[in-house]
Length: 131
Image (cartoon, rainbow, N blue to C red; front, side, top):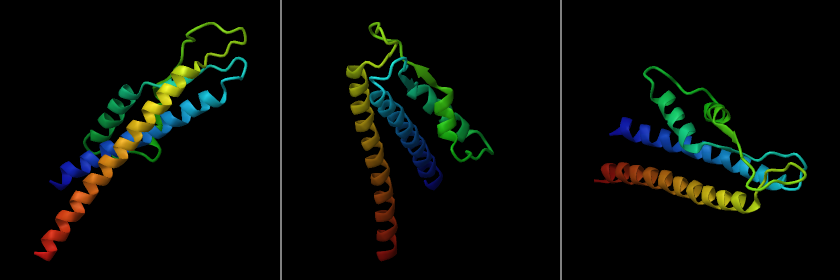
């Protein structure tokens, strides 16, 4: 039970860290919407999470500090402009805002899941000691 819970929490913690990194990138894109020549960036979240989970699940491996950020860096992609701009900026504000909102909701959902798991575990430990 405990190893399975630890694996679930570790997976969710990695997802949370990758979501935070993605949010940082999306915020940077929005902040640079008027910067000539700026190329919008994002990460391939699904691929980054698969890699982070595979590395963490490898026998005898301990994830290094900052490992999810390094994984995110390997899955960094540059956005193709939806329409050409004379200044070379590839930020599409509609796309960026939608991605930012979507990522925010998923970040919050991940936090709620982690909190729920921990609350359940604490409740189980309390009831065991009280009964």
